[in-house]
Length: 440
Ligand SMILES: C[S@@+](CC[C@H](N)C(=O)[O-])C[C@H]1O[C@@H](n2cnc3c(N)ncnc32)[C@H](O)[C@@H]1O
Image 1 (cartoon, rainbow, N blue to C red):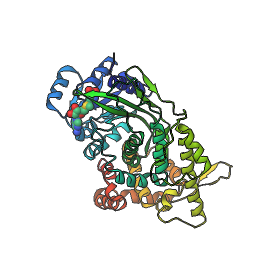
Image 2: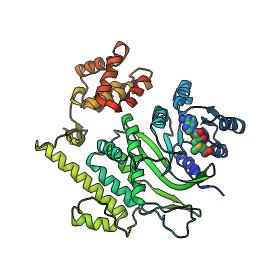
Image 3: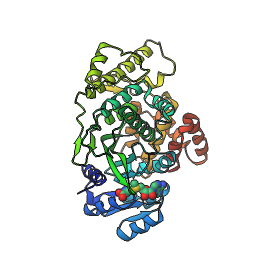
Image 4: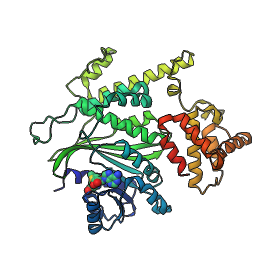
């Protein structure tokens, strides 16, 4: 019989197979004891990379499996990227950690993302220990600040939705073995929320967003110890990714809880009897909120979502009425402004690159450089004109000329000043943008 970890690994293969046939897929994972490699072989996967730091484990992996081996996560993108073409991509990457997403792991892993985005499968699994070595609760004030920067006022509603979902996990069933310890849903939600913030920070600069996701909670054994683990599966599409679309997919994604007997698919629509009002939270805002929280589960989550949207709308109305709440302007202005078209359909308002806020200008320039690089540094078949029309609602020779000049100021002798521009716009969050630039 499969162990819980094996069941999750098989789930990832099944998830990937929706987007890419497994025998054609290219996979990579952290090597460990080779369990995943064994399942790859069973699924007739020919193209795989095992990344393993530990010399002994690496030796065993070389002996027992026919997959390519690399020793360090941090240099994997260079090795794989060096192959180029169809070999320089990864359809399914598993960041299979024993602990949590720490700074070193994040900076090692982030440069691998573009290799996933370039593939046909575009799937990622992240496995983390739920509580072990997880500093989310100790670092809670920092997590809250980072969340506020990403999600603004919606942060609290998102956390409440995750807590409502954590309350649906059947952790207090008396028939569970002793090692399936009950856990505090409020703390579990905070840890999941911290993970969402980290994933948001890593992903959003790339403008790719998950369009499908699955979440798993289970207990796994590693080196003789049992730990509660979480695995998150993602499939990405290139979209105007933003924080609300990420949180929406996250909160609505199926949540599974693995027990020794079965994999439970948690019914997120189910009302939950226990109502939790966290300490220090002001009295419920309205009777409707009170009722929604009494129902709990998906009803409470939907209410929080609507509350967040209504707060956002109030902000937009305040801006329109020139009554801007300081510091909230950028987050609340909708990204695409539309005006009625002559033919009745919506049409993007005409604008120039310099009409965008500085951070968006840099993101647009990086994305455009990446698109050009993917096409051998050429804009073919009207793709340049289409890019400008799509982004700015117009294509005119002066606009084209000025943007080509701005693009020219990102490379060659101008590279250093473009890097300085990124530093000054993004401050301590500049690294992923600089990494992207360094690959161009
Ligand atoms: C949970 S295990 C992987 C399990 C494996 N996927 C399996 O199914 O058997 C994680 C492995 O990653 C390795 N590791 C951790 N950090 C690493 C890094 N920065 N570079 C390479 N390997 C690393 C550890 O030595 C450990 O063996």
